[in-house]
Length: 62
Image (cartoon, rainbow, N blue to C red):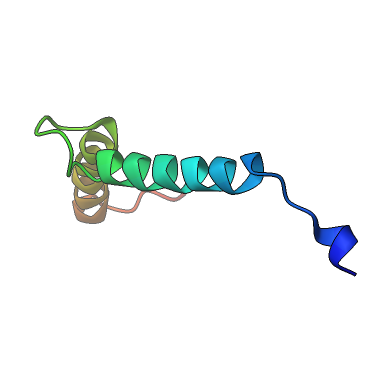
């Protein structure tokens, strides 16, 4: 049974690299690593403004 789950040294290293890249990407996307406005934040602000405008408009279904 132990033969079917053999991992080389590269497997845990690859997993560690993947997890580190994932965490760094999440921090960068949330704006915790850089001080400039990210594309995600800019799009969220634009969507919020659009939704507020659409909520105030009159419904025009014929």
